[in-house]
Length: 422
Image: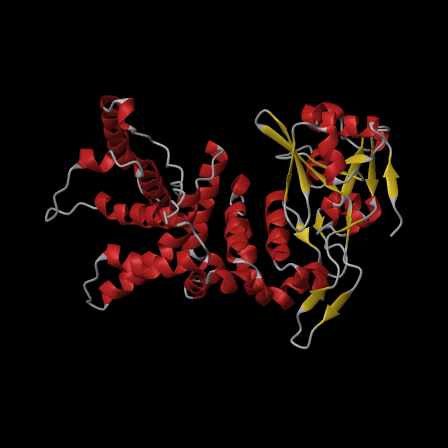
C-alpha cells in the first residue's frame, strides 16, 4: 500500500490537544537528530475529537540511546525493551520502530512459529506490524502532518475496524487481537469489516491459547467508557464468549439470546459507568454474573432443594474466577457482595445488625449491585434511600483512624519471604 502524507490543512489534529510531556519527548529526540512520531490510539482519538488516555511515541532511537537522552527514563521489558519516560505521575511510553517477523512457519499441529520476532525496523514496517489500520497512523511535529502507511484514515472516516494484513494469520499470531477488535468496535461505535469479522468467526477458539491474565485484563477493558453491553453482544455473536465464559454464554443460550435479561444488567451498568466515570472491577463481574447465578439458585428452589446461597456462589464462581486468573482478594469480594444481596430481602426468621452490614467496606459495591437489580426489575429506587442514609450516619461516627473507607481496598501486598539462616 502506498504511504500517504496528510497536510495540516486536511486533518483536525492540533499540538494544543497533545500532552505537553509527549511534545517534550518528540522535540528533544528531534533535536538529537532522531525521528519521532506520536503513534497509535492517541492519533486515532485526536482525529475523532476524543481525549486520548495515553500518548505513545515511536522513534528510530534505540532504547539505550533514549536512556542517554532522558535522565527520567526507565527501560522495561525482556523480549523487547521499551522506554518509560516519567514526568511526575505521567509516563510517556517510547518504543523503537519494529518490524514483523522475517519469516513465519506453520508446524504440523497448525501452530504458527515466529523465527525472528521483535526486530528493529523502519516507520513503514512499524506501521505494518500493528493490529488494526486505525491504530497505524503517525503524527509528526516538524510539519504537523499525519503519515498513513496502512489506509487507517480512510477506515476512520468509514468507521471500520480492519486488520492490517491477513486477519487469519494475525489472529493466530495473537488471539487477543480478536477481543481488541470487538473493544474498538464497541467503544468507537465502528463496524468490523467483513474479512476481519469472518476471521474472528473462523478462529474464535484460538482465544483459548492466549494467557489467562491477558484475557482477564481485556475483559475488564471491554467495560471502559460504558460500552460493555455492545462489546459482550459481539463476544456472544462471534463465539468468543462461549470460549472464555461458557457459563455466561450458556445462560444466554437458554435465556432468549439477544433478548436476555443480562443485556438489561449490562445496559444499566454502562449507564452507571458513564455517569460516575468509574468502572469498578468487582461490580463489573458481579453485574455480569449475578443473573446466571441467580438462575441456577432459582432452579434448585423450583426442584424443592434447599441450597445455601453463599455455598452455591462459592461452588459456581470459585472455579470460574480461578480459570480467568481473577485475583483471590477480588474473587472473595465478588462473592461477598453477591451474598450480601440476600440481606436486602426481608426475612423475619433472620436477625442481623443493619449498622454492622452498612459498615462493611464492600457495602458501596453491595448497594450499587442492589440498585442495578432494582433498575433491571423496574422497581422503586427509593428502597435504597434508607440504606444510604444509614451508611452516611455510620460513616460520620467512625473515626478516620479506624481505616473506614467507602472505596474498595487495594489488593494486599505480598510480604517478602525471609531467608532461612543456616
